Image (cartoon, helix red, strand yellow):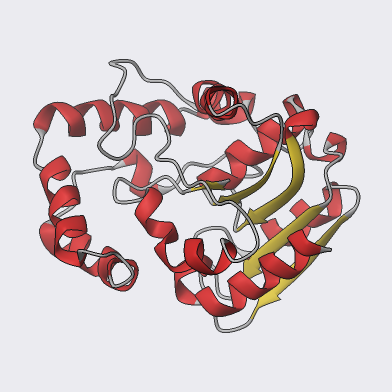
Length: 239
């Protein structure tokens, strides 16, 4: 199961460069998390607890007792909480530039505004090439960004996730030492969103874990270094 990051443009399509290669050995599921993509939204400022429960209920709906879980950025935060709360649900865990340790919110969350067309096209340029209809994928996101009700609700998600009390309550520092799933931590050397020391601390805190550092790579590892990322994840999950 692949869990995406926090941005409005993030979602299932951001795994387009990874789903095919990973599905050579595994059944791959890449859901839009609750509040992202074209699915229904709740008109509340829900946050981490809602999303962790969404993943569990997603497994239940598909009659999946447990799965490997790969989480990027916010998705890694959600995956960490899931592995802590429901260890029987997670076979192996892959945390990719994962959030959860830092209590400070990102400036892109505290000052969030609906993305422009140029931003959406630039953000989806690489992954949309793996889509059977690239322009359709981009048009879908453009349509969502132009829906004032949807963007207002997403703004409330960002506001809630940026709240210092929320971030402290769901901080993973005290939780990571209790994760029992075999864990791979993957980080980019040049990550400016979640700098490498966060990755080193994540690996240090989780028993039975190891760290893979990708050189000349920033935060968006599954897109920036798709081939290397796919190989590393496949090797780990196949051990």
